[in-house]
Image 1 (cartoon, helix red, strand yellow):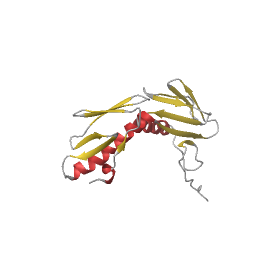
Image 2 (tube, rainbow, N blue to C red):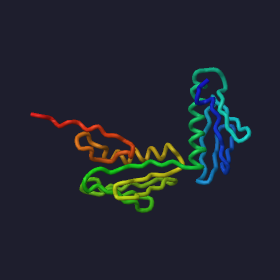
Image 3 (tube, helix red, strand yellow):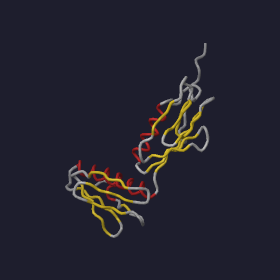
Image 4 (cartoon, rainbow, N blue to C red):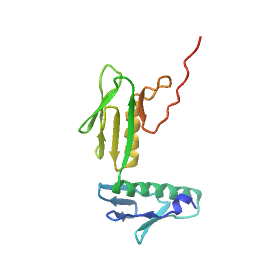
Length: 177
């Protein structure tokens, strides 16, 4: 059986988990998340912990138990603490400004780039060169951060662009005559 799938998920205080036949719903301080359950696994709730078990001994059910366990653990973590991604702008004149549910970027184009945030996602700009994307759904937070980064990914010669805060850009040497 999957090593990840064997580990139980601890449900903290204030988080309510509802398991129906085809979906799992998690409700916490930050909101509610629901996800359909694959037919190859079952989720059992016992004394404040969730256990994901495959329905049979097939390879697919074994793999799916680890996947579903990770997804449900992210849901529990998301509604209790939330997730955040931090982006950094590197370049002369590059700046970002959060305006409600919109992110206004000036990143070297002749026009400003405006990105609308979906519901459930908050964007903050602690400084002009930092962007914080927060939300309770890990997949959506990561997807929005990737879309913002895709507007101007770091280039390999000077390193200018939008990068994740923990990203290391390896610079290339310029061509010599």
